[in-house]
Image (cartoon, rainbow, N blue to C red; front, side, top):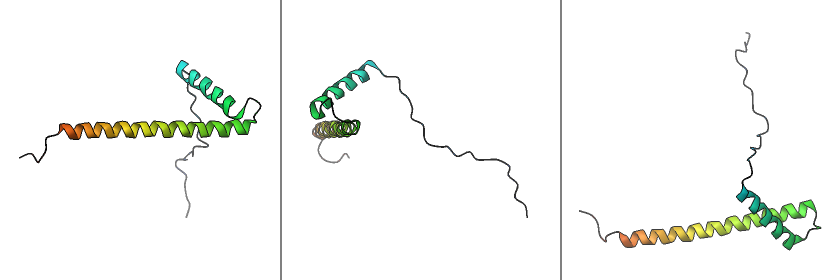
Length: 90
């Protein structure tokens, strides 16, 4: 019994990072982040220490944004509930 190869499946290698063109807003955020890193760990901190501080800062930002989204979502839900008529439609 022979096996014939008709088509070869090429498995993708390591996923490539997609490069994004930096926008002015992105560059301002980088500057703000770097100032915060200077304040938290100092300019003489090692690369690893600065990277860890950047990651912690990003987590803090995302958690704060999530809290604001949840608060905003709750307020919208309560406003909708107040606007809806009571009882079941007939």
